[in-house]
Amino acid sequence: MNTVSTDDRYLHKKFIGPYILKKTLGIGAIGKVKLAYHSKTNKKVSVKIIRKILFSKKPDLKIKIHREISVMKLMFHPHIIKIFDVLEDSTYLFLVIEYASHGELFNYLVKKGQLHNREALCFFQQIVSGIEYCHRYRICHRDLKLENILLDKIQTIKIADFGMASLNVSNELLKTFCGSPHYASPEVFSNEPYDGMKADIWSCGVILYALLTGKLPFDEENDNMKRLFNKIRFESLSIPDTIFPECKDLLLSIFIIDPSKRITLFKIKTSLWYKSLPLRRTCRNNFLENIHVTTIQNPVFIPDPDIIKFLVPLRLVSDQSVLIKVLCAKEPNLVRILYRQLEWRKNENGFSTKRYYL
Image (cartoon, rainbow, N blue to C red; front, side, top):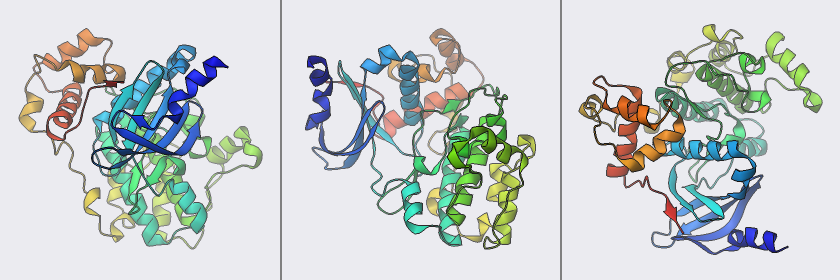
């Protein structure tokens, strides 16, 4: 009994560092998510409270969480959920992230049944914009689904949950099955080595189909995985006539079994249906817009140890000593780009790369 009461004491605290905890937003297998306010700015945030005792029971979970933190700290995009702070004590890890007050896109769709063409396209453009940003940093989300797409108070898309994300510097094919089976591409389902970016595009197609029809394109009663896989792999997709012809063409080009022939994000953005609605300012990506070209070209001879701590969990190279050598290399490389992005976030955006201990 004493162990339980000690383990739960922080779940009922009113303060975590400068944050005032309020109602519980959700409960998961590894802890709770609570609404909180910053005590000085009154800014609303979500605090994910993770029990550290689980790390000793599941070492892979610790790696996954720290990797997720590093990936989220790396990114800064209007359609990707932001992480503001990481706090911890001997018992809990607290991730302070952006609060999306309107919740999951899944729940929004359940209430509305299906979306009109214009609204679905507006959401889809924002999702594509966020995923394109990820892919340009060689980050594959690998768990795209309606439940992991959030909406803020003005119904702006926020892509969340990067726990399955993979950063692929060397363009190697991935092998791990990730994500929800209903959103998984055929090559992921087949347990074959796969391109995570191509798999993300398939998942985007599933989301788009669901937005327009109110149902998933591939489903199976009782969640029979073998039958579901056969549907995805062998059955032709039925697209309702209510969907615009240009959108139907786009969906068919996404749901191509052979990933090498599947449409790219660039071609999605140049498709007739995608271009039929003017882009929001937030969807006009400019890769590396925050990093001056000369900083990428210049070697990093004295790396910031705080930034190195967040690059190591990404497993960009075999170990930290190799990471330092790559940063010092004469030629520009992706590792240096990622370093400079974190450096920019720390110096210019008021973003902390440090972890706070309570």
